[in-house]
Length: 54
Image (cartoon, rainbow, N blue to C red; front, side, top):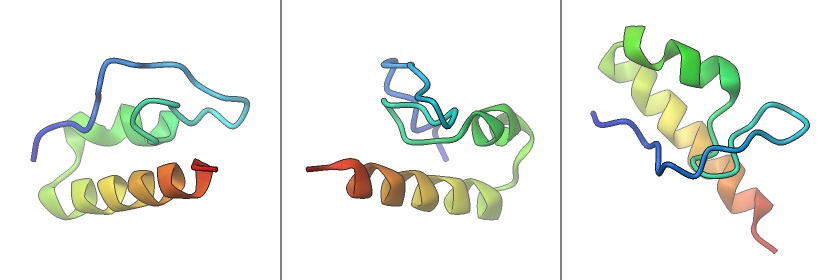
């Protein structure tokens, strides 16, 4: 699975990327994660981005 990074990296006060929605911890874990963990990260990030939408 490709990284969800969209090159709009900027962390908010909770250390969540405003571009892709991943937490700093998830970003750091990405390269060492298996496919199942990556799917969890992508799903959690997408949920964070949906909740952020007005």
